[in-house]
Image (cartoon, rainbow, N blue to C red):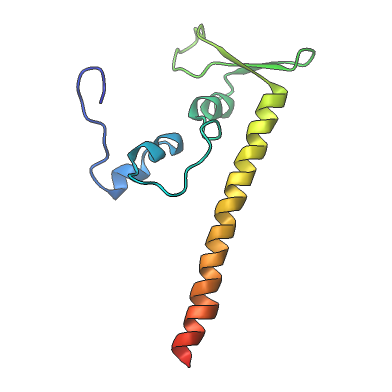
Length: 119
């Protein structure tokens, strides 16, 4: 719900597909596969994708501007490069975990299940 009381819950699968990745988990009941809270950071991803970042090579501090502020860019957030790389590693591990699940289901369906039905 927005501050004005508008319900932003998607009404169908197409509406759900249009949600940002980081918001999708909020709309799934009893989700059995959840990503780490810090992995799906849409604000950091959007700031990087739209070049709204500054990087200090000496301190290795990344300053990013996650909100739509036009040219102002007054409200910044900071993260150190090491924390950023840790998040990337956690995201990679989460994707690898999901990939292993999909591969296991594929093997079950096409190798085990299909073989049982053929015989």
